[in-house]
Length: 98
Image (tube, rainbow, N blue to C red; front, top):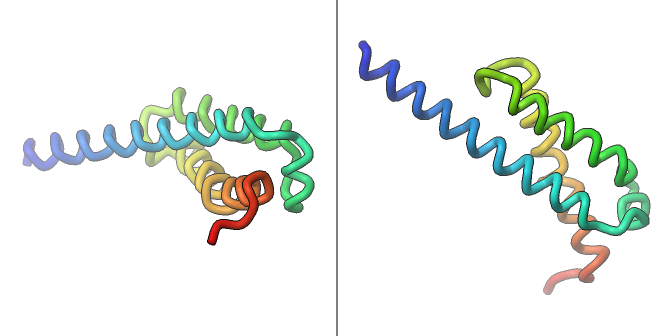
């Protein structure tokens, strides 16, 4: 029983590190982009995305587990940025990839 608990703790710790890394990556990506690109792809503005991702990072750092409500909301916000906003922003700046 103790081994299962230890394994679960390590898995949750790994997921927390993964979530922190993804959120830091997304925040740095958002900071480095031109402000006009966000509105060009019909997304929220750059300052709003920086605030969302900054809050997500703060919530992840303050949460004790990735299963807390604020951590889950943070992970979802990061996922939306990485899956929806980032590809469109990159496509506008680099052009379509063939």
